[in-house]
Amino acid sequence: MTSPIRLLGTLAACVALAVAIWLQYSPVNAGGQQAAAAKATEARVEKAAYGKMKDGTAIDLYTLKNAKGMVTRIITYGGIVTELHTADRAGKVADVVLGFKTLEPYLGDHPYFGAIIGRVGNRIAKGRFTLHGKAYALATNNGANHLHGGLKGFDKVVWKAEAVKAADGAALKLTYLSRDGEEGYPGNLSVTVVYTLTNQNELRIDYAATTDKATPVNLTNHSYFNLAGEGTGDILGHELMLAADRFTPVESTLIPTGELKAVAGTPMDFTKAMTIGSRIDKVPLAPPGGYDHNYVLTGGGGSLALAARVREPRSGRVMEVHTTEPGVQLYTGNFLDGSLKGKRGTAYAKHSGFCLETQHFPDSVNHPNFPSTILEPGRTYRTTTEYRFSSQ
Image 1 (cartoon, rainbow, N blue to C red):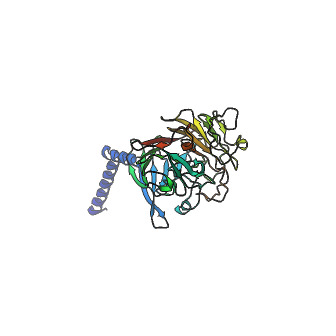
Image 2 (cartoon, rainbow, N blue to C red):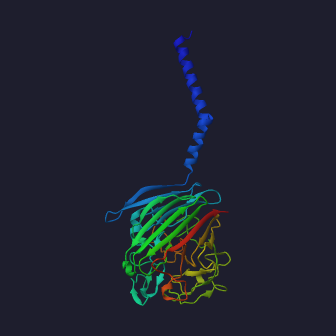
Image 3 (tube, helix red, strand yellow):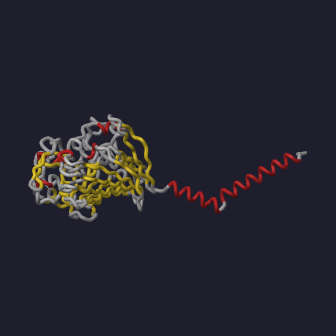
C-alpha cells in the first residue's frame, strides 16, 4: 500500500509538470518566445578584438548581420571588408571576397584586398597635378605614377569606428582625418564612410568628405570578389554586364589618354552579358594580361544607377553594383601570382578575383574633359555604392 506522503509527493510533481507545460504554451509565454525569436533575427553589429599593430595600436573587428542571415566583417585597419557571406541558389552560404584570416598579412604587402581607397583612388600620372595655379607632387608608388593615395593611403590607416542605427539593416560608421600635406595632398580632409548591410542583402557604402583647402578626392572600395567562393579558382567563367558603352583607353602604364572610346566591336564590350574570360587574351595594353580599365557609365553619375551585373553560373549567385559615380574600374586580378594565401589556405593565382571599383575617372585631375574630382571648401563630397546580392 502506497503511503500518504508518497502520494502527496507524486501529486506535487504532477502539478509542477502541468504548470510548466501551461507556461510553455500559454499565450503570454508564446509572445515571449516570439519576441526572443525576433530578436535573434534582428540586424545587429558585434565588436571583437582583431589584433595589434607593431606599435601596439589595437585593431577591432566589426561583424554586421542582417535579418536574413547575411554577414560581413570589417576591420578598423584600412576599413577593410575581410569577409562577406551570402547564399547560392541552394541556400549554401560562402564567403565571396578575397582576404586573410588574421591581421598580420593585411599589415604586409597585398593588393588592397577589401580596403577603403583614398585620398584619390586609381592613378595620377607621374604623381603630379596643378590646382589653382599651385603645383603638387605626390609619391610615385606605381612605377612612374601615383596609385591609390600613395605610400600610406587610406587603406593603411586606422579608422575610428562606431555602430550606428540604420533604418533597414546593420550599419558601421568609420571616420578619419587626413591632415594637410598627408601624402602630398592639400587640405585637412575629414572623411566618413558608412557601411550598411541591409535586410535586402545589400552592402551599401556611403562616402562623405569635407576640406579646408581645395583638393582632389576620389574614394572607393577595393574588394576582390569571387561569387563561387574565395579560394575556389578563377573568375573567368563569371558572366558580366557593364552599363557602359564607352571606356577610357590607356597607354602602357595604364594612364588614360584622355579619349572616351566606344566599346562596340572591341574586347571591352560588356553591354551584353559575356564571360569575363571570353576575350580576356585580346585586351590591349593591360600587362600582364587582363582587364584594368575604367568604364564610362551610361548613368553619368549623380544618382544611384545600375553599373554592373555579375552572375556565377555554377552557384547561381548574382551581384549587382549600383552607384552614383560616373565610372567603374574593372580589374581582373592580373597581378595575383600565387604568392598570397587566402582564408582557406589556397594560393591566390592570377584571376582569382575581380574588382568593380566605382569612381571618377583615373587621372581626372590632369584631364579637364573628365568629371572633376576637385572638392572645394564649403562643399561636401558625397557618393554611394551598393553591392546587391541574390541568387537564381
